[in-house]
Length: 534
Image (cartoon, rainbow, N blue to C red; front, side, top):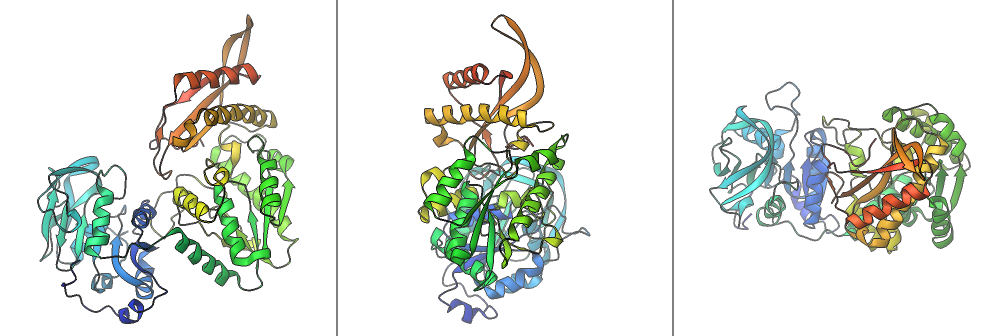
């Protein structure tokens, strides 16, 4: 927004803007979208600090922040529906720019005197907007550009003072705005990668409309989380952290150690569902190199016994989660003052499991470390990475000085191999997949192809097929190779591997892993598939 534009004074703003230790930032109001944290990620990519709040806490957070702008997210409701989020209208009177996305745009227009109706033609997927006014959020964007639409309602009449900045064939008000107040509405989703210039549009709102400072850094995230943990735990509280050795739990461990020091107790649980060499690597790195208080628990029989005969993926996750909690309950009794349970939960886990900020998001799959703690566990969750994406965690890990072997390690799900073995779980199946997966991992990493990949692993399918090995008939298992590229795990594409590499992997698995006689390749993207099979 131009510095000459007169803005009404924000209640309490003079105090906030003069507070040097509170960064100027953006409030994102989560209206039930699964993309709220993706919006936050785009804001942070522009090096601007932000917070997310549900509607009922929006004003409280706004008044506590050093606010320079508000973003209203999309959501599944209709502004005229009974389930419409109850957004405080005062959010439009804060005297700062507001960007409404999809539902957020519709709500803003309706409450400023416009009109929203069910659209004559719904828009889902890619669309081309025609720019009429290359200014404000569309500054430097002229002609046409591809965006991602997902709406059944549309603005039929814009409020007084608003004008049209862009449209599509089906949506005359694809981008609208009142530049004098810094109010802009987008009917599409600029935060998703399918909107070709979406990041630029968000950055225009941040830099040109809000004049937000680009001073948000990994160090800022670390300092903020350390302070939050220290405040929560206090001077004497102790934390028990489930340490897997992956980048998430590793970064979480370092942050928690910086916050509470020796009052952090790391517990590594060998559940029998680990990759090749996992347990030893954790012992060497964290017990040896980092000198953390590390307890290794051999719970293989307990987990595999509880999983016996269970094939349903959701039930598998719940069983693993229960046993995990039971193990932790036992271990926590060793630490008399341990009232906090540390976890390396990331936001993709959160949004696939539960509504993260009170919105009406849909549960895709449950995660053992999200929202599954029983009431009688008498421990409070500490999750310093809960609002971050994997690439942000890796950036923070580098900032903290963690080695590339840890920071750049591919993700591994909490339930381990259990979600990569379709059907019931047995020790024999785990050993079979573990050996096949090790071949896949070692060959891809040896080739150098791993540098451009998000995940690469094997899946043991519940199907057998006939084969011929040494002139003898075989009837053995099928291993599926899953290789994807992604930026944030919200979307993913299957990744191309050279035929020679695929041939090497297939030959090694069939020749070296007795019990597998067929290797297939998964060429599905997310969506509609997920990265993991279960």
